[in-house]
Length: 107
Ligand code: HEC
Image (tube, rainbow, N blue to C red; front, side, top):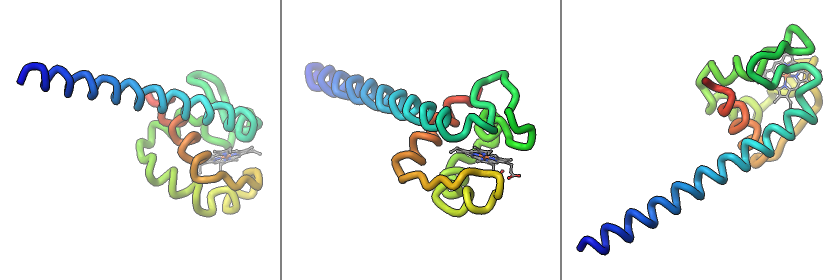
């Protein structure tokens, strides 16, 4: 019985480590996407100012805490609705990466 418990615990640990690693990779891809497509206007770090003062720093988006709304917004008409925003049509994977990156900015 003990051995089974040990195996279950081991499998859970490996799984958790993989999930964490996947999140970091996704965050990293999201950061790269944001640097390429969003940095001209939005602040991407924890203390910087947005280059376009009207564009909310991404850390503020993270503080709103509603990542599902953000995800839906990006899949919807976010980029068409705001005239200042680039004509950017992210794939679902890119949206996940961007959202993971924005979430990583939450304190
Ligand atoms: C050319 C400047 C510019 C770029 C580039 C840009 N944005 Fe924005 N963004 C804005 C401005 C300005 C606003 C504030 C809303 C407005 O007035 O259009 C905004 C608002 C937002 C909002 C908040 C919308 C809301 O409803 O509160 C999100 C989310 C957002 N941008 C995401 C992004 C992402 C993700 C990228 C990169 C893929 C990006 N933006 C690139 C200018 C930009």
